Every structure is written in C-alpha cells, then in structure tokens.
Image (cartoon, rainbow, N blue to C red):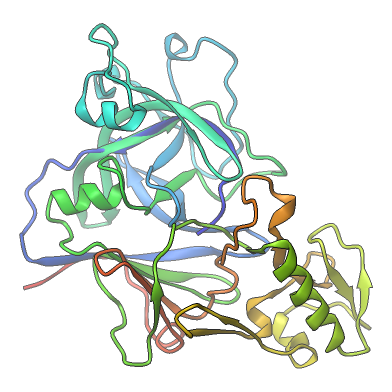
Length: 375
C-alpha cells in the first residue's frame, strides 16, 4: 500500500514445505503504522531460525517479499548500505539457503535461462520510486505466534537506499501482495493450499493501524461498490494526472474556509496554516468538502476530507493528493493511494478481476493475527 522509495540489493522469498489442510483457509494480520507521519502500513512477522521479528511494509503493487539483511563479504563485492531499522538485520549465515541460478523460480524471476555454475539467484527490479537487486533464498516464515510455516522464496536486501529518510525507519522490508508471479507470496500460499482464493481484503484506519486478510473476502455486503481491476499498484498518497490535479485543487481552494491561508510547509506540495496548530484532520474537516471520483462503470468513490488531508509535523493541514506529472515514472496515470481508502474495507478479487470497497466494518471489526481454516 505504500509506494516503494528505496534502492535495494538482496531479498528473501520463501518456499512452503509443511503440509497444510486443503480446506478454505485464510491469513489475517494486524496492521500498524500510519499514512502520516510514518508513511508506512506494515505487518510484523517472524523470519528465520531462530525466528526473529521484522516489520514488513504492505504493498499491493509488487509481488516480491524482502527484508534488509547482512551477507558475507563474498556476496557483496562493493560497499553495501542499509537504512537504520528497529530490528537487527537478517543475517544470511547458511549459504545453503541461497537459490541456484538454474532453479525454475529463479529463471522466471530474472527472465534468463540461468547459469549451471552459479549457485546464486541474483536479480534486479524497478519499483515506481526505487530499484532493487539481490539474492533469492529459502527460509522459515511465521505468520503468528502459534503457526510456523516452512516457507518459500524471499529476498535478502543488503544494499538499500531510502531517499528522504531521516532517523530510524519503522520497516525492515516489504510484504509484496501483488499477483502474476510464481515467486510472489500469494502464488506460493495458493500452491501450498494455505489459501484457496486469490483475494485480499484490508482496512487502514485514519490515524493508525488496521488489519489485513489474505485468501478471504472480509466483506460480502450488498453495500460493496465494485469496479474492474486495472494494473495494481501500491502508494501511500494519491496521484492525479495534470488536468485532474489542477481541477481538484481549484475546486478545493474555491470552497475553502477563509480562516485558512496557503502556507509553504515542507511536508507536501500544498498546505494551509490556520489560526492555531492542528493535531487531527477531524479538527479541520468542517472547513473542507467531500470530493467524488466517478469511474467508467458509473461507480462513485466519495472522498471525505479526512481521506485527502493530513496534518503535518508543524500542525498545518496539507493536501494528500499529489501531481503525478512531478513523478516521471507515473506519467499521466492516476493512482489511488492508501490515504484515500482509509476507514474502508478494500477488496482485491483477482479471480473476478474486480476491486471493491465498503464503508462499514472497518472501524467495528476487531483485527486478529491468525492462520484460520473454515472446515
């Protein structure tokens, strides 16, 4: 859900080895973090032997799961860089965990026939705001305190850059929930019958936290609005093409309450200063109007002020919709980010090629961290 913004070398994906019941199963996880100031929505999982905790930034727009790691100098023949994180780096000590170049999943990942003499699977990948290179390895992956899964391929990142990061990052890597690759988390879970449906549901709450369900539709109400699924991506903020951005900004400014004045806050492109310091978007909600996005299927997404505004560290109110034109990799594409979908159940149903959202249940449902089976 957050847009990638680092240059990463090395990763870890995992391969499931333990038998799992063939019933309709799902994985549910607590989500922590916030759209702002964290800029990350993440889940905490355990990886390795012994199992250690890592915070993984949830990203619906990429397929690969990785953590920052340290590797023997023989695998990093140049100066390698990692950003500061809350947990110790993952240590790749056992080189037998490396996936060889000729492994079928490595061949798919790097789109190369492979090298029989190379015992490592190295790769390069470009995100919207970053790039990554690294190695594919096998290791254990634990979703909850009582459900350990010997698990698939993931990647070990040992040379990482996060532009604009100051201090310690709350995340240690990325949990890639995108589809379309055999090395992706969803594909591996389905292959091993941990889940039987290619469905993701999530709730990100205004302020902080939320929950995530993999393999199950958390909401099947008739109140759910559905649109056709396009190319998935993950971003913290929402991005509009030049024309849409200009029209939206003009509409917001035209209806803006006179107590706010435009102010050059470094947090965002467009911010306003009020008569006092703000601490919550709900303080300024009455000063703004709800926006509406109309899709080709005549579906409408209502965006209340708390879903397009944020409060900066200086206590100003800022516009959390950004111009895509200033980010060359986005081009003229519109990208709806996590900020806009807060306090909604959002459903990605790949089998039906639909994305849906519903307003209820997000606040009232209790999160849980389990691997569940409906027998």
